[in-house]
Length: 215
View 1 (tube, one colour):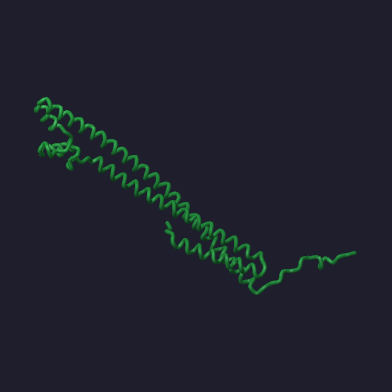
View 2 (tube, rainbow, N blue to C red):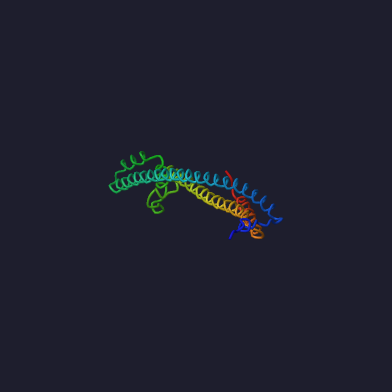
């Protein structure tokens, strides 16, 4: 018994008037989504690089700030040591040694010491280091470097967040390409559902990247 090959072959797909429009929309969405996928991936890599550079710069400033803070501590130890010797000389009544110590104080310590001596004994704080006149340049340097480090760290975190959001956009547009391509493999009405879904996700992606800052 023979079978006719024509009768055994798969029935041809029935075309629908929407097929052509779905195909055109699919090509357009795939093309646009591919370009935006590449663009978002590129922006994500730029921001990731920027984040690394900013973190590195922030660490440099933090190390510099720590160095200045260490120098401030060392200078304060010197000033405290000289003040202790001044007090010790006073307890023994050695006014000559006291004058010598005052004359050879560090420039940053001398204004505070003079202001401290100008006060009455009962109104004096425990040490000239507590006087408003006692100011170390290294303290200001440490504060400046710390502020720079914190600013760079904040910018690095912002760059990292933008990199992550561009990655999300990349995945979004890759999904658009996938759904648009798959829509050509289905019959009416499923191919319409998929192309509409693809277009909706594409619009969502556009709104998403419109809120981002490009480098």
